[in-house]
Amino acid sequence: MQGAGPGGKGDDLASKLFSSLDSDSSGGLSVDESGLSQSVFDAMDTDQNGSVSADELAAALEKQRESM
Image 1 (tube, rainbow, N blue to C red):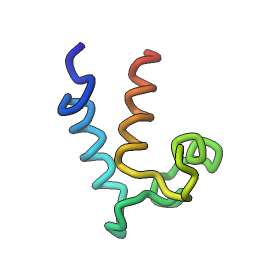
Image 2: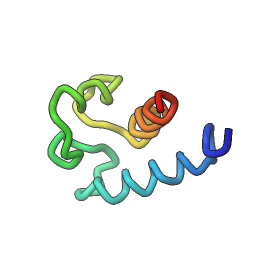
Image 3: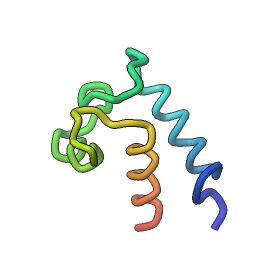
Image 4: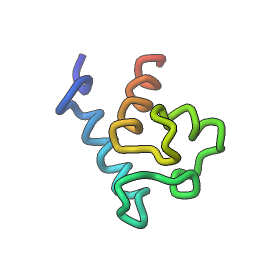
């Protein structure tokens, strides 16, 4: 399947989205930067450190894409 896995188009989209949302360039998205509800944000924050990493965002987008 094109776009899946490392280096696929999905990763590029996730990287661009992450960069555009990470307004303070901290390397992690806060709930405010993400624009998500707390419950959705918490589901994406799989390591529960209070921020969503680029990898966590990419994984959430891939999971969403697979469910379509």
